[in-house]
Length: 250
Image 1 (cartoon, rainbow, N blue to C red):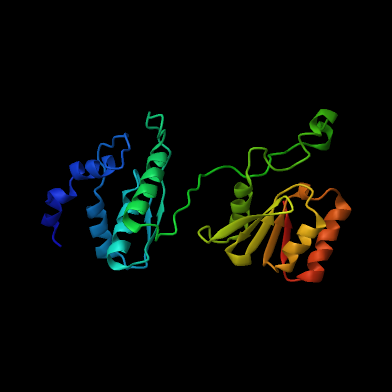
Image 2: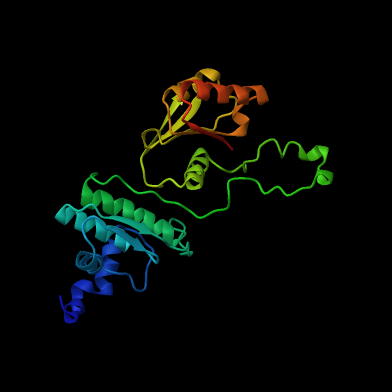
């Protein structure tokens, strides 16, 4: 394909605006990229198993272009899109990122009929752990309640799970499942690369059930155990049932 071919109206901003409007997303972009243009560039410079990265992803055109090419040639291309959450002024889609999330979801349904495995959205944030920098002389009785847990109050199980994945250097795109066992939520990542439970006061029967699955890594939170003897007992359970499992308490 020559440079002159890109002058075609198929690659115009007007076409790109119509493609985005077709998803009934009201946010307007001044210079959106048309799907066919990005798909053409990807097919020219990337193979069918490529990992495509877009550091200025805007409305998510690159993701739809990847869906389009995979649908056409049976490729297994993946994508990583990065975008600063610039505000749009729209109540339903307050940031550019929220526009892209909706477009990727709808484009996946339209072009792949459920064949794609979906996508994950991550937001850059601070550590899950509280920032505590007090000296012994600075503590007071009124602070004890705040220090019962070293994890920030607004963090969810998935925040903790993916935080652990980052600490252990595990990929973030692998499958995971969540199940309930005796009132506790068990998260299993990539068929046992890591099993985590962040409930408080986890029964020993649940600890044993997790250990019997022989995960490569197991993670709990400090408040999962009622006291120090309970925490030591967990270590002994894993040493007995699966000595090669790396156990971490956060």
